Each structure stands twice: as C-alpha cells, then as structure tokens.
Image (cartoon, rainbow, N blue to C red; front, side, top):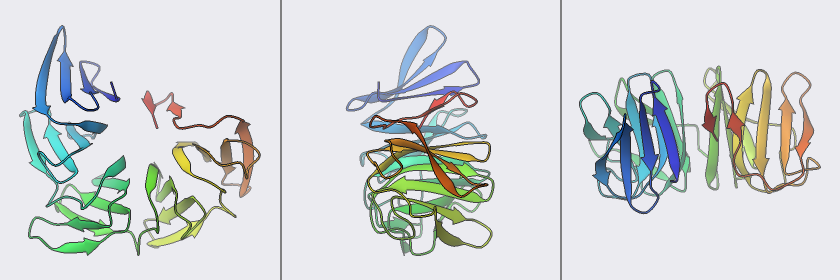
Length: 231
C-alpha cells in the first residue's frame, strides 16, 4: 500500500500504487475506481482527495465518501501532484505542475503550488509560486509551510502567509531537498536530504528563528501522533 487514510475509525482507504484505490469497510474491501493513486486526504466534508494519473481528473480528483462518486477539481493540473494539505475550505496542492485550470478552462500559472477552494470550486495561485518541485505542505494557522527542491522564496523550505499573501524564508533555509514537514505547536519539523542544519531532520523554532538538530539520517516521512498520519 502506498497511502492509507482513515474516516471516522470505520473506513480505511488504501492507495495501491500502480493498481487501484480500495475502501475497507468492516470486513469487506471494495474497489472505488481503477487507476494509480498515491496521495490520500480526507477533509471535514468526508471528501477524499487523491493524486493519480489521468483517468478521472487531470492528476487530481475527489471521491465523495457519502454518495460514492468521483468529481474533478476544475480541469485539473498539467503535471503530477506530490502533496496535499487542508485548511478550512482550502486544499493546498504541491508538485511538479506549473499550471492549474478551472472548470471554465481558465488557465492559471501556479508554479508547483496552488490552492483549491471547496466553496467556490476554483483554483488560485500563491503569488508567483516556486521555481522547483514541492514535496510537502503543512498548515499552522495563517501560515503554510512548504518543502521541496526550490530555491526561490527560501532555500528548499518557505512560508506562505494567508493574510499578507506573501512568501518568506526560514532564515537561510536548508541545502538540499525537503521531503517532509510537520507542525507541532510552535515548532516546524522538516526531514529530507539536507545537511546544513547538522543532520537530515531539523526543527525550526519559530519563537527563536533558529534550526535545531533532530536526527542524523535521510528522512522522507514524519509521523504526527495527534493526527495519526505520516507526512
């Protein structure tokens, strides 16, 4: 299984990499669609957002777990989605894509990160976006923390503020790819292939504006205990 997501402790959704998305409800497992699905995200409306190939929506689609039906997000993306995060009525999407398209076929230049609003059913951009792939997104209040390969707006890690609608760097950033970000209280944990912090995982202290060492090995996933989810 590539990804697992839980709804109300009664349903398990499994992303099966190169085969299918399945739902386990009690003792039974049923297919909800064919295709390759990798990212699973459940929001408060019991909607399951998935990244996949081009069978349903262009690189991203939504499965409603109440009425068991698929929906597209506008006309989708022009490249792969690698990460999803939710904040209120907004779904933040990061990856290799450079454009997003609304249902009326309005194309917007997004550059690796964009926001889908579940009320307006429209895409919006985050400034000018970023100059390389986004691998991880984490939300903390009005701040959206983003990690990846980019060097614009911050070296491999940056923060988007939803009030000022501006990007800012986290000090000098990190010297190689950030694969995972998790927020815990006022601290931001990042994991990846970087070494500039003294290790391959680090903690950003937002109060002190400094990095601290967490673990020495290459990190591609971080587990957040209060949400029972891997990043």
